Amino acid sequence: MRLFNRQIIFLGILAGLLGGCATNEVQTPPPAPLLAPSRATVPSEPWLLVDTKADNLVIMRGQQPVQVFHQVALGSSGAGLKFRRGDNKTPLGVFRVGWINDHSRFKKFIGLDYPNLDYAEQALREHRIDRLTYERIRAAWISGRTPPQDTPLGGQIGIHGIGFGDPSIHSAGINWTSGCVALDNRQIDALRPWVRVGMRVEIR
Image 1: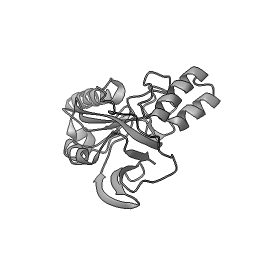
Image 2: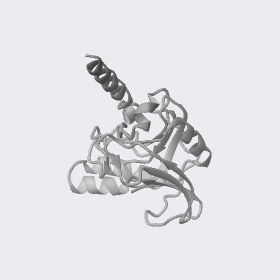
Image 3: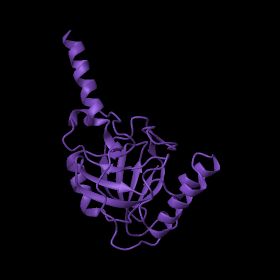
């Protein structure tokens, strides 16, 4: 009976954490439009690499690692090509930081410009979005604005902490988010000074 009660409590905590990236985060837009970077180039200024195989987030400068954060958590469906809202998949690809919320319920939330052009183009080819939705995403991406977050492809994808969630779930190595990349609270505080709107983030 005691084991059963522990399982119920554990599942309740996990369900609370899985609220993850599904709720709207306050967006702080960039003060001016950003030039859209090439999706193929690697900048010389700091950028972020999320290695989903090693469960690491690395601050990079060019091709050199500067600092490594171990044991990140991903979406509860793992990482891969994200097809739709609610699939709990952390999207692979190259993104930019679109906004930063320093007062998130996850302590800090670093929003990414998902869906990017690669995802929008594929979704248009596969008839998962219409031409108007594609053009909205494309116009935002080219002008350096955060793309619409209300499309069938989903949104509110970012890098965040645990906030007031149970750190034991995170430290157990469970992928608990709704499609984001999560660090513990100490790590997100250490990462934050490096991050700026427009920064390159590669999830692979």
